[in-house]
Length: 247
Image (cartoon, rainbow, N blue to C red; front, side, top):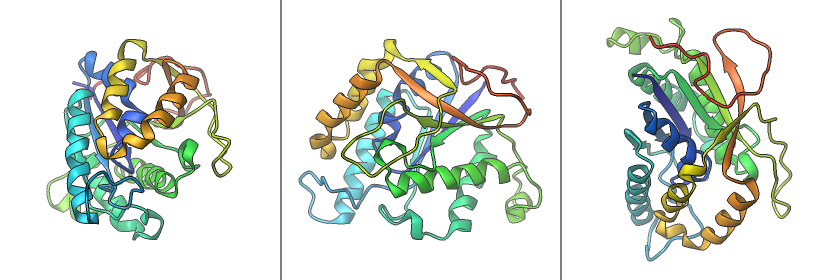
């Protein structure tokens, strides 16, 4: 079975940037995974919660609900601090992701771009940077050798994609998204993607902004091929698993 791993920063990123593709590939029999680095405890919108800890607990449940709608085989929220990924020890985060890559052994990975997606959020930037290094280092025998002594083996995912966009938000900090090299048609899964975002009920005030953004994007998700184990020239794709072979 082929496997797809998505690395995000906050609960709700999995629906907003990747929801349609996660559903599409799950429907094709591909095993999908999502790793979210933070529980989103620093969010502006907090529902009825009264502390960071309470908000984190609620947002973890919302993430589980969203992953259920998106038919994610396994979703995991790590415990890194929301709003502080740019001040988090680099090697530790990458090591956590490398460990999971070596365990899951994905064929394809997708994450956020270093520009921070259309919101330019620093956590989005760092999630992409951490995931990129983990993509490269997971396959090397001279990185995190303690994991290899514990029984894991190096693993090279075949392709790494950044979520990207053909639009920007005029009221946000400037952002320079990567060119789209893959266009994934998600019309059949559009309503479920919106439903998954709405499962994050603490973030209800963001729903109108989200719905406006996805309407502008259309019923497609856009990706940029950031790395591949087989050197190639750039070409437009309509399938993230194009050219991918099973182990």
